[in-house]
Length: 201
Image 1 (cartoon, rainbow, N blue to C red):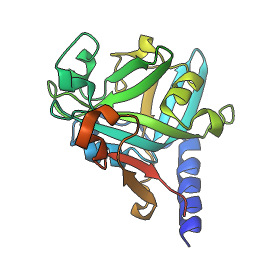
Image 2 (cartoon, one colour):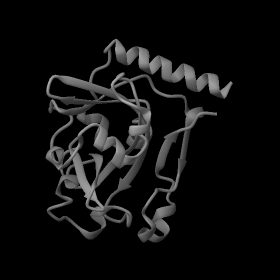
Image 3 (cartoon, rainbow, N blue to C red):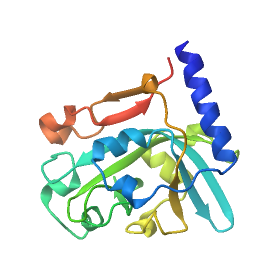
């Protein structure tokens, strides 16, 4: 039964996405509690426009980074040139480089001046010219969709290069959460169950 719910849910999202019946998410969607946004982004459609080509993929994994007290967040060390987008308007993109080679895509959340964001960790393709194997990780999906620091600070609400479109809500039976990945330096904060993902039963 769980496998059927998962398959039916994703088919419904894919069908509605292909019909392009859903608008892009508004600033009000992102200007809310970061954990709620991270959970509700699951199943939504990430859209990337490169030249005349448009690529779509469903969001299947996210991580929440919540304010200046979150030791796993870049904002824990205060506002810097690098982290400045996190303090900006909700819906703005925060893109940074790790290990000198991988980009990571985040979307700013909550009120302006409060540093919080959701990291997009995983996608599954809607567009036929994308492959699942290229989208199952934050660095991999950025490479596949040509996301780099040129998009840092751009607005997903008003911009025309990358945005998020609405889609039917996913069943809570499919949603799992866990501690965040790759933040061993954060001590107890690494165990916060702020990673959200869709799991097939």
